[in-house]
Image 1 (tube, one colour):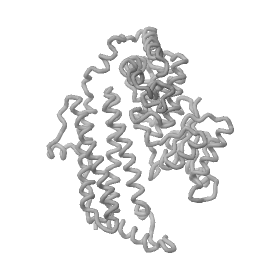
Image 2 (image 1 turned 90 degrees about the vertical axis):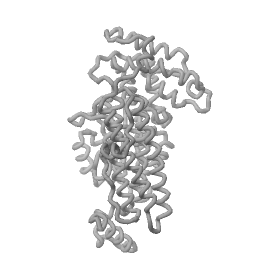
Image 3 (image 1 turned 30 degrees about the vertical axis):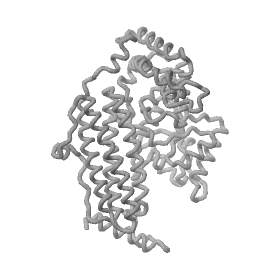
Length: 458
C-alpha cells in the first residue's frame, strides 16, 4: 500500500471550492487501488467539518485520523511550519510517503529538506472521469483488460521511476497515464494493452538511454536524466545493458500466455510509427483550440498596448510576456493538425467561426479588469487543453499529447500569476466598504468601487 499526502487549498481545492479535477481523479484512482490518502493542510482546525463535508461530497473517503488541519497560531509561515512538523511526525512514525502534493514552492522546498518526495500539483495532467465521478484510465485499453503479473524486477524499476518522478527529475514529457500505469506495475498489474505498448515503446526509445550517458551511467553527475526516469517508469533499468531485452521478452511471453499477441517484436516499431486515422474529437478539438488560443493571444496583445495608469510599466511587460508565449504556441497547434494530415485553419473568418472564447469587455486601460478578463480566458483555455490532451492520448498521438501537456503546465502558471496579480481586487467582490478597518480603508474602497463599476459595465 502506497501513502499519498495532499494539501488542500490551491492543490486539491481551487477558488470557489471547485475541485482540482486532475488532482481529485488521481487521488480517487489511488484510493480505489487501496492506497492510503493523508490530508495535511494549513487551514485552521476549526474548519474540520467543512473539510470533511467537501471530501465526502467529492467522493474522496479519508479516515478522520488522516485529516490534519493546523492548530498552530496564525502567522506568516504558520502553514509551512505546520506541514513540516507533520511531515517529521509521519516519518518518525515509520510512514513511507510515496508523494506529497503541495502547491506552494517554499513549502515544497522545506518539505524536501526533511526528506519528503514532493510534487507540484501543476504537474498533474488531466484524467478523464466517468459519469459517476470515479476516475477512468486514459490508457488505450481499460482496467478490465486481462492482466499478467509483472516480474519483480520490473516492479522494482517502476518503483524507482516513481521516486525519481516525485523528485522532479522526469522532465516535461511524462503523462499522468504513465505515472498511473507505473503505480499499477509496482503492484504487479499490467494489462495486455500495456504489455503491447511496453514492447513497442522500449524498442523505439531504448536509444534514449543507451546513447546518453546521463541516462545510463551512474557516475555521470547528471544521472538520472529524464530518459532514465522514463525507462524506469516503463519497467526498464537503463543502467543494465540487458534490461531492455528482458522486458521485451517478458512482454512477448505475457501476451502469448493470454493469447493476445497480435503483434510481433519486428513489427512493433512499424506499428508505433504508422499513421492512425485521427479521432474526429482530436481534430475538432485542435481546431477550436487554435481559434481560442489565437483569441487569447490577440486579447493579451491588445491589453499590452492599451493598459494605462501608475502600474503601466509592470503590466505592459506582464501582458507582453503572456502574448509572446501564447503566440508561440499557435504554431505548435497548427503543426499538430498537419501531422494528422488536416489543414490548419488560418483565415480570420474560419477562426471566428471555430472559436468558443468570447471577446473580453474593455472599458478603459486599468490593469485590474484586464487581468480579471485574461484570467477567465486562460481558465477556458486550460479546460480545452485538458479535453484535447485526453483525445490525443486516446488516439495514440503521444507527441501531440506531450505538446499539450507542456501547454497545460504553462497556462496553469499563467493562471497562478494572473490570480496573484488580482490580489485584493479579487477579494473586493465579496467585501463591503464598511468591513474595512484601519489604514487600508481608502484602498479597499477604491477596489470595491472599481469592481462594482467594472461588473456593471460602466
